[in-house]
Length: 266
Ligand SMILES: [Zn+2]
Ligand SMILES: [Zn+2]
Image (cartoon, rainbow, N blue to C red; front, side, top):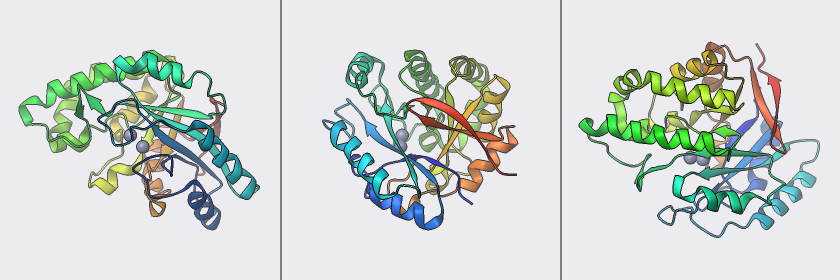
């Protein structure tokens, strides 16, 4: 039994090999009733997904697939915004009139031009790097740009094993940020792509999901962050386990940027 996958990249993301129709077809075959496409939107020229995003064609394709897969799969139109503080106004202006979107994931992929995902951070620099990352995350939450916080501690792909120490050092900072997100009724995404990158816990790790709950967080989503068809809904059971351990027994689904809760079966 599958639950909605709320993080998928298709043909409007440069780094994906799958199409919206591919995901719909596969979802209908495995009995997955709802998917959310969340294409990359970035204005940072150094990112491989940098392009003049074709919103009109994107929505057209979502609507075409909604007709094709009607009654089989519910398809949500989303974006994953690559947040940079200096690009905030540009992003805001761009999406202001995009009223057909169901959800927006906000993500921090860079710290001062340095990739959060692909850098090798030297041990002695991890603390500063994580602190700088968290400052940008705080600005993202304040910006009001997104409904969902994407892969909150994705810097673990760059910091490796010493991360646990940093989590400990930054617990209060992290708690403050999560409390702000909870106050704004934002959802925290449980992203299961960590497992395909060899990590043993979700993004964010189970501890942070628990912290979010203790801060009054109400909404969570679960997403595979698939860039290829075969990654659809992968490691979902691990994401569900993390959610339940933290005390979340419902996930949120979005329509026109409004959340509604759906029960996670026992
Ligand atoms: Zn991302
Ligand atoms: Zn993504």
